[in-house]
Amino acid sequence: MKLKRDLLCGLLPVLFFSCVSSKKFKEEVAKNTDLSNRYSTLLGEYNDCQKNKNDLTAQKFNLETDNGNLKSQVANLQKENEYLKQNSSTLLNQLQAMSVMSNSQAESVKKSLESIGAKDAYIQNLQQAMAKKDSLNMVLVMNLKGAIGNLDDKDINIKVDKGVVYIDISDKLLFVTGKYDVTEQAKVVLGKVATVLKNQPDIEFMVEGHTDNVPFKSGVLLDNWDLSVKRATAVVRILQNQYGLPPAHMTAAGRGEYVPVTDNSTIEGRAANRRTRIVILPQLDQFFKLLEPKS
Image 1 (cartoon, rainbow, N blue to C red):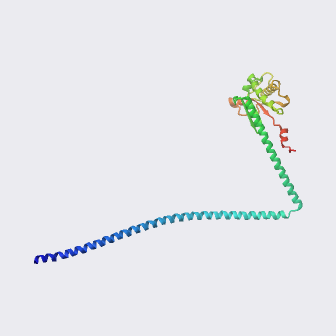
Image 2: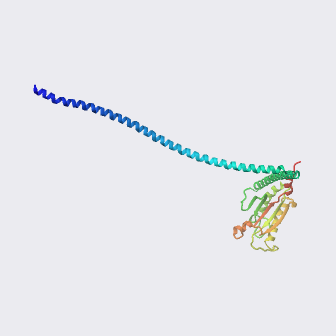
Image 3: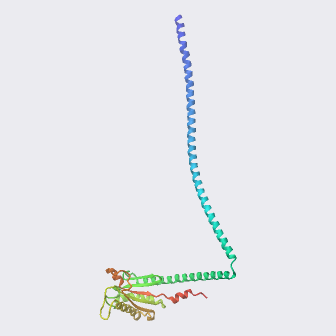
């Protein structure tokens, strides 16, 4: 009996201690859980603060940029305002000066303005006339190219330069070397050119003979100049006698070696310079008729 009492007395402190320890443990767990929740809450608030800080930093940068742009715009507006003030002052001075003009000065200004208006009208008419002339030249060039067909550009070239139509035909196509007799093949080409020119009854043109600078003398021909003249007259006679172009509308001229299109130092260059050129002469009387006032 005494033994049981002793055992009971020994176990009571242990059981009491166990109860106290378990309760304290639960309290500590609850505290720990509460601290964890508070930590999570604080961490979330910290992250939100960081995000807000980044947003505010970006907004600050944008505002500083906008502020710089606005300052620049204000500076430009101030410059424009100053410029307008200066112009206003200048115009005011001019108006004041005009207000004290004499009658004779006012009449002089009036005549000057009328003269300027007349010159402007003349310039406009001149531009219109030149545009019409250029259009007529382009039509002529297109008709010539259409009539001649697909001939090698090295043998014949048709162009407009500074309002003048040029037809360049190589001597290889027109003549035998050193001669001025027109070949049969060239007569066919000249016939096609003549067909187009005959459709322009008022047209006038010049046939120019050109040579290279290689010295030449044969028979009655004294030099390249003689040869170029004879070649030009030979072409004119073909156009007159075989194709009926009026001689009064044609001019034959020899230019010799003195108006080359390229350097004579190469074989190719000399070949390009040996040519016959048909120059459609500007019809100045018709051109100036275009400038006459319409009744």
